[in-house]
Image (cartoon, rainbow, N blue to C red; front, side, top):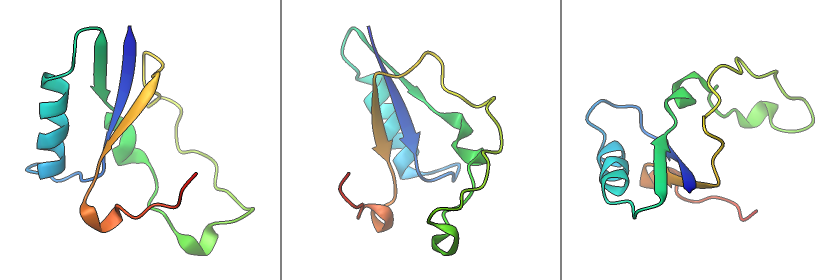
Length: 86
């Protein structure tokens, strides 16, 4: 069994990103269980001014995804699509 954590970067009720994530979930192959992480709404906004050695403590641990994901999929607005390589 493969558990995929799906992150939807737009929180709007009528978000195209959410619709795309829902379609991907609907068409997931057998043996793959995708789950949208609803706890993203509780994450703090990114602030480049505090990026560095100092980190704020997490708000809550109650929003942890279950079951533990074996992979991740992201659906987000194109304006945030430029990410630094890991």
